[in-house]
Length: 123
Image 1 (cartoon, rainbow, N blue to C red):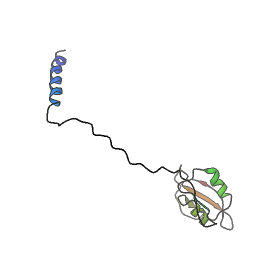
Image 2 (spheres, rainbow, N blue to C red):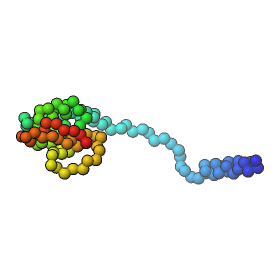
Image 3 (tube, helix red, strand yellow):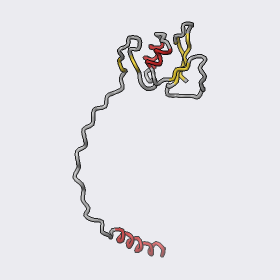
Image 4 (cartoon, rainbow, N blue to C red):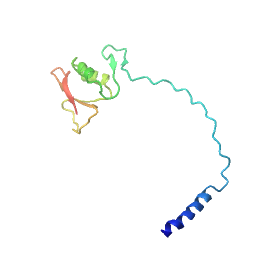
């Protein structure tokens, strides 16, 4: 009980000393207006001039319905890479590790006799 009584005056002395010193005048600076930023545009597919690769989708696959519709057209691996440049396409015979990726960034394709993509899965 005596220790708490002894600490109380010590705390008040420390608090008084903390306020001492030449800190200068305390003032709030006037607010300056922030520069106007350009509005953010949502990510949309980019239209290309080439008729074989009409749409380029950047980033990993998030719209699975549109991706399945694209694969249903049986694209060539070159057209796949041009349309989805950020997705790693793994064709049969390519060496690849089999780690699990949950972000749809690597597509293991199944090819037909003509070398066109007829299906596959993300891993």
